[in-house]
Image (tube, rainbow, N blue to C red; front, side, top):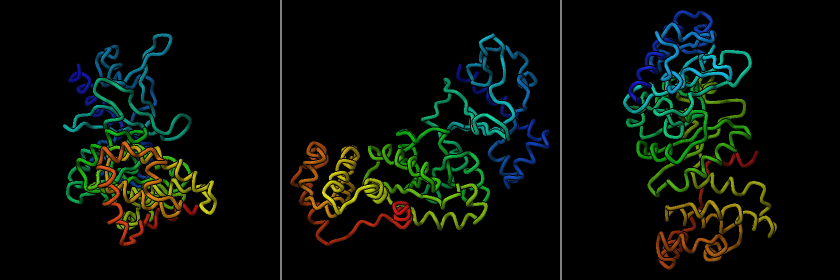
Length: 356
């Protein structure tokens, strides 16, 4: 059945590409977003007409149940079949072999959700796939860096401005499978978020997902764009080089961990220091990277006025430390690394975020 679904999805992608070429309105929309034809072709962009059964033109048997199983056709309560995607710019989602396994559709105007994704199917699971990975793989290997953004247009717009190493989650939160895949491909993974409150909440969720999967050799960063910007608008206004320069200011995972935990904590008071410890504890318990855990504990120890040993006890980390190293070894290595007094720098980008 898998190959049948992929065949249908591939056929639909071809149909949508043809419909884009035939729709001045859809072409005008993409031009209004500053997209060139070669970039649209590279990512296989198409257009799903507004008709409820436009796919009848693409498939001889519109009643084929495989169209439902592929997520292309839905059935209403009255048994009437209709196209799932209507009046949307279509972004094909590819697997590692380059086969179409699903779609993301962006509405041109009007009501309804901005983005609509294919449902989970036999060949498509959102938590395992990243949009643009097929196109970005070579650039990720060449640069050693992967940018993770939130929107399909962000990926396409970045690519047009020379930032070829960006991928997007599929309208869902980052998953552990996403993180493991990215860390297996890139030396550095930078999660990019809008600079508003929603962006910071999304970053906190991504942090929670990353913690169990990162190692001491992983380099994970968090980039917050200026307010009123997303990656698409920023790169169109400033250019690709400016985006790459801004990414140099991304906070480290450790820096963002501390900055996020400190938000709302009045550290001049005992209650505020206790709140910081209570906030950090569940996340600390998820860390499997010994050196990272040592550095974060060092950073928390100073403002809370607790010793590292007290933090290990308060945060319930005895078992974690024993699993990583013996507690004595952990403490000896911590003391030797902390003796030189090196502070942990959360990065300019993170400091700006905390100050908001």
